[in-house]
Length: 573
Ligand code: MN
Image (cartoon, rainbow, N blue to C red; front, side, top):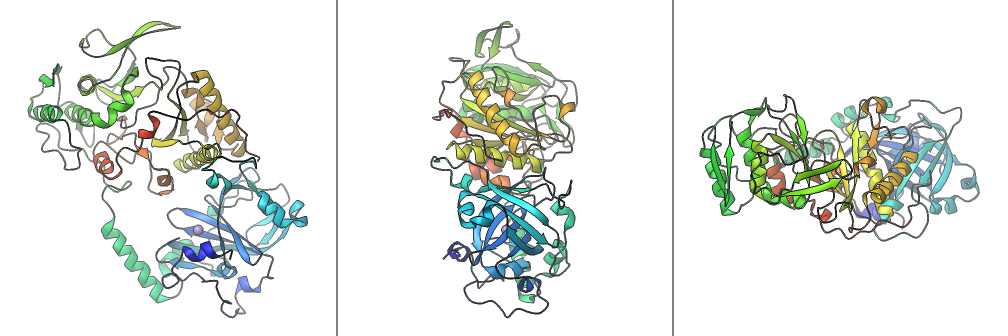
């Protein structure tokens, strides 16, 4: 009965994986898995599917209890690893290696390690009780792994709000300190099957030994190559919408349909010389140096940036409306000097909305972007990044969302950022809260948690700090609290200090001053698992195709209906 989920997910006419519904093939003398004593076996399968991970499996109760470990088990006690429980697998799976040509788990499997284990401590007395409590300890004796490990559910056992099922499946795999511990150990450095001696790439190239399987895998590969959607992650090359200089040419078909007033204004922009007077509905503004390159190689001109921001206005304005704006200005393009502008300059047209804020440091008049024409004016002034406040002018001390800003620094990688984003998701699921995810457009990811307006910045910041510190206890070697770049080498920063008045992040769909004009792009949570995901995956040129496919994925942050939890229980580690 334990295998029902396993069977439901697979078509055994298609996959070479064992069906597990009858006694397996007669054990062969040379078969490592079947030589191991029954009832005490474990294995680790390196599995390149949507994303590379390691499946850790323990034999218990006639099945293989299973966890997917994205970064693989480590012998280093400091390297606690996220392990997501998956469906029980049949015992014969412990011998499986090869290519899964289609369907669930499609990809290549290497039998990375196998051996025996014994339960230790409380798990020795009551394995079933400890399994249901999500806290098990065991001693491994395998080809690559050895010594005592613990698998501990991350969240506590308090009653959980709905939507926390995913959190229930999240564990940490932790090496205990003993003579088998090995600092710096990484599974990826030990690629090589304990069954066949082959590396994962060799298995992928050779298949599972069955030529029909390889043929199926090849056919599948060919199909995928033909049908890969042009707008999917990272596939479309970064290219500006047209060559430098007028005219900009007909807009690509993927552009959204626009208000006729804006459509007409963009028409006029494309026909204008290097400068001129421009009309968007009732607004008039003077455009200058339209063919000045703002991005080099490929060249993107100021005319193109103005076109982008005005064309994006239906998506962008909801996130700017009624919010004071900070802006980063690059008068000579992204390779030249830049400065931050937080006030409305004296030469700005009078029709641009503004708001006077009396803060501790004095009074300042801020720009508030409530219409497409303002976006046109800003772009003409060389504004590349748009950074709206998290709060609105009618209640400036009370933000509409909490933000988790995740940024790597060398040698931490985007993979580390993804892992931390998953941990933030686990924490939010545990609290029964929703977060929305976007790329920063540069190197990081950002999670916005929509709130019902009420708590002030101090409270919101305190809550984000608590969650971030709880995650830090889980992943201490990868989280940094240090703000300054020099002091956070190799770590991920969860910057809770962003939750403060007039500290800001780039708006969704804001351009960023990076190669190819990347765009801060809202994501679905599942896209975290896409190996092609990058923070700068979408650009001024490719975002339109993406929007046509996904629509705006960020709308959930507006009109937030979530309250901060009264209490936040840190994960047991
Ligand atoms: Mn797997």
